[in-house]
Length: 225
Length: 159
Image (cartoon, rainbow over all chains, first blue to last red; front, side, top):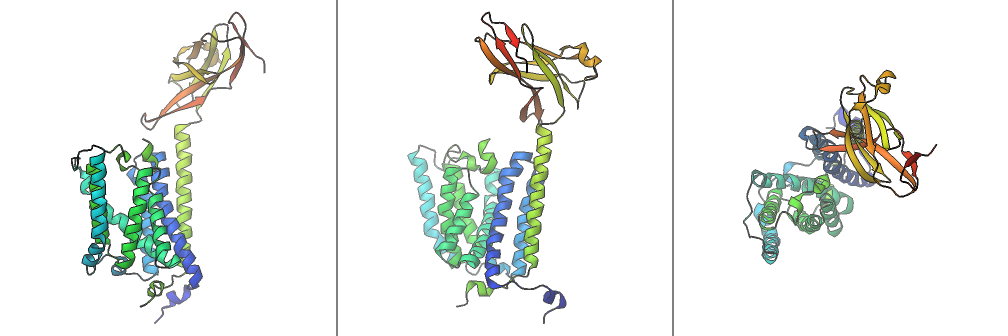
């Protein structure tokens, strides 16, 4: 049964809904860029003000999920396909970790010798948040706009890399990582498995590669100072 | 197998309104931050003047937001940094004219040896903001154009 309130809200034509999906991607990416580039440069480390664009982005994502009738299970907060997703991620994650270790060894850095700080301990949660925004939202909207497959995977990866500028090496790494994670998500949408892979690669990077090479993984305005 | 987009409901126009609202909110946020930052980093409170004298550049500067404060000034000649000092010399004429609460807002710079010909001096007020994390330079008065003769003596160029 359609309630009176629902009947008063006209649905959008399909082609408009796809354009809308692209707009949603741009809107969320813009919020992240505002936080990274504008807020950090204008107000430094004021967490309260940085929270405004982040909350706006998460508010939009939550509202959009409700509007499109997506459940937590649809988004990827689920366990039924965790093992299947881990199987898909195992090879690329192991290869990425080995490549990072090999790069560290080649550059003469001490392997897994970095200090694990409180920042690193929160990495799994941070990775889950990033994977939710990247795949649970942007990937799903990219699939709406461009369909499942290479086009939407590339769009997701480009957005992910864009958010890591102006750190050139980090942007390149996240472009590759973004493609792999987006492709895996399209086959097995499980955010916990993606976050695990993301956290493992990030911790290996932080502990093996000299912070100078990736400028302590800094992005946005923070990259410069 | 069902298509991905068929698994989702088509959103109502409310989503468009939310997107527009979010864009407006972010535009206002960025605009407000820009204005606040501009006023904080480059406050429109500095007032002063500079001129060429026989020995160099002298003038006065007052921070209207803190009229008792002594302002730090920097001299640049032809775009090159020359010297910095605190404007705390006596300028009774400035206080008498009502520009400052007291007379201790004057500065004097001795010019370095300069080649003969025309030059331009600029005096900037140095301003700290962000608990000392940011420093900005604000031009005090107008750029001062002057010429140096063969004997090395500066002369004002009339505007």
